[in-house]
Figure 1 (tube, rainbow, N blue to C red):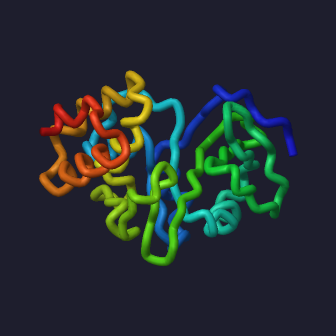
Figure 2 (figure 1 turned 60 degrees about the horizontal axis):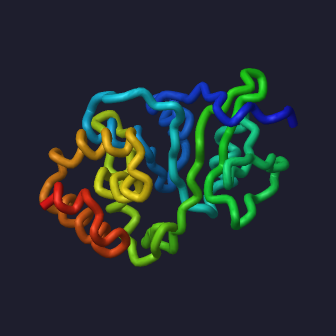
Length: 200
């Protein structure tokens, strides 16, 4: 296994490239993070340093087989730890970064999700739960993405400039159901959050 790239050395796939590579995968997966917001909006509104997608933890071996040109590392607390071929990720790893050895740049970030049968639960707070089929939507081209209310729920914790930009772009476009879901989750986990006033 080659030495992993520097943490900021990214050459991420575009959503369409990632979807093409995962086309044979039949279990649920979805693009997350800032790209999920832009896929919801139908246009790229800002630059994205990486690309993240989510899958049930127990499905990681199948993802690894599909992306067999990549080497993988568990990512936690600002460091990466190589995953030997065939080795399942330790429970402490929720994020698995994949890099292309020949390019020596990170290509994608895999989120390992808590999925129990038909039910998904957030790693942030297990009270935030949903049937898996209600966690993601699809673009007209069929690319699955995390629903915007969930993407914004995750972004509410840190409120970095990019998170604020994503909220400003996506919040006005939420339908009544999505808005109510986001308000409920923010009250549950981040009560008093500034976004609540802006969603009212």
